[in-house]
Image 1 (cartoon, rainbow, N blue to C red):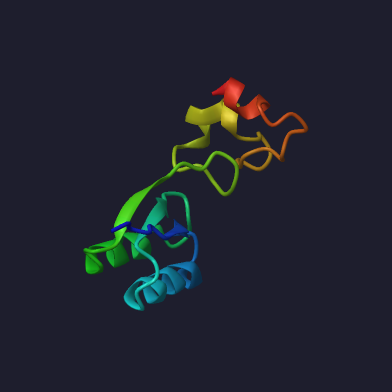
Image 2: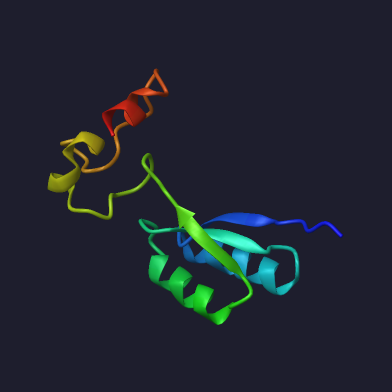
Length: 100
């Protein structure tokens, strides 16, 4: 017998995303998710992951959207001075990974 893993990305991004992932898991389709630490609904995502012990939860590493979890001064190479967020998308996709 083969198993199908259905992963729902971005748990923790917004309350609506969390609700959708929770409902999809409870209805039997979603088997795992990835938790986004810098989402506005991170704490709610953690709570949901505890309420749903059969939902596999992994980490979603995010280098391009939203505010950093660390203080901007500690990740200067990853954030814009003006916005304290990740700079806009580069024309060269490998640029950000080289800076890390």
